Image (cartoon, rainbow, N blue to C red):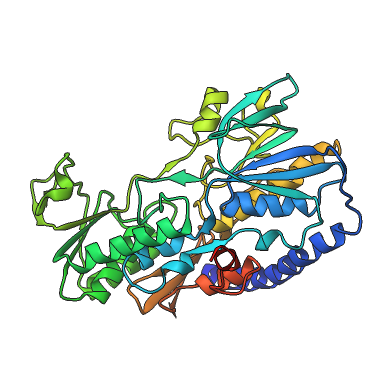
Amino acid sequence: MLRTLLLILKTLHLTLQQVTTHIALALTPRLHRLTYHTVRDPKDIVVSGASFAGYHAARGLASILPTGYRVVVIERNSHFQLTWVLPRFCVVAGHEHKAFFPYRGYLAPVAEGAYTWITGAVGRIVLESGAGEGKVVLEESGKEIAFEYLVVATGAVAAGLPSRVGGKTKEEGMVMLRGEQERIRTARDVVLLGGGAAGVEMAGDVKERYPEKNVTLVHSGERLLNRGYGEGLSRRALDGLQALGVKVLMGERVVIDDQLERMEEVKLESDQVVKCDCLIKCVGQRPNSGLVGEVSPSSIAESGHSRICPTLQLVDKACSRIYAAGDVTEVDAVQNARGAFQQAEVVARNIVRAIKGKTLVEYQPKWWEGATKLTLGLKKSVMYVSDRSAELILPTKGKEELDSARVWKFFGLKPFVDAQEEKST
């Protein structure tokens, strides 16, 4: 009881801190405009990838860089893809466009000339000197861009929905989401693989949206959400799904073969057979660390994540000017947007400190980075926070569109108004 009370007090204190953080986030780039000046040939800091970690790192860097430096953002997608709403929007129709918002709004307050944007992808990193500088080579055009520092924020990849879209444009993504909606709508027996957050949320959404369907969640672990989350949340997730009528099979794996997608049933390793005319894979997400692996094989962990120092530089000393943040990194913490933001802030601070010859700071995962909001069906959800000594689980209610409008606002946009799309029509 005492530990829970202390956690509540810590959470209230954190709320006050967040107010200060948001004020600083708004003021810093505006104050920076007073001192930053555009120069003819700036030294470039390249940010590869602009999801939560990369986009925030770009904003942080462009808000504090000294004159003479510039941020170069390289991102392959036309729009920011809001990944944590994808499981919901694979089930319910009419919200697809809300998962894709235009870039640039978050960078609107920064000084003129502090950044430039390239739509594309880095195909290769080349180190050119013992000091660690180098260049990136763009995937399609082959164009070379020299860098003083490089931020690898390439995230994670998956076979497709519901974990990742796979397409580069908003239009492609919306078509894919509608395809999943139709596949689920016409099915009778839906089987989901993986009891992580995506699997739990999507199983609940499918069953509540289509109560007449048979919905089965197959999970290889002994409990749901077993990576980084406490047992209390696992129990709440299991109870919530079972109350909706979802059949949950734990400690099980599906026998995968080439014909699995077209079968009317799936076989488990225990020899149990489950009817299935719609299989949804909520597993298989892996770090997108190929760029790092090519330039520094020693910086890749067995998991495929990029190995980093506490300063978020790659562990390879020859790559001391290459930093990494977000899902691509190996960290002892739940990987989500909160953690990505914290890492991005450390990366931005350290690059500027390195430019100025100052001692770098270390990233230490905060207890609150693992806080999450987990939906259990279309109408119910829970807020979860833990400091590893206690868990706080609060029932909440949410909208069908989740918190997508709030995220659009945070990134400097009017919810669901895509000016980029309007210009192209």
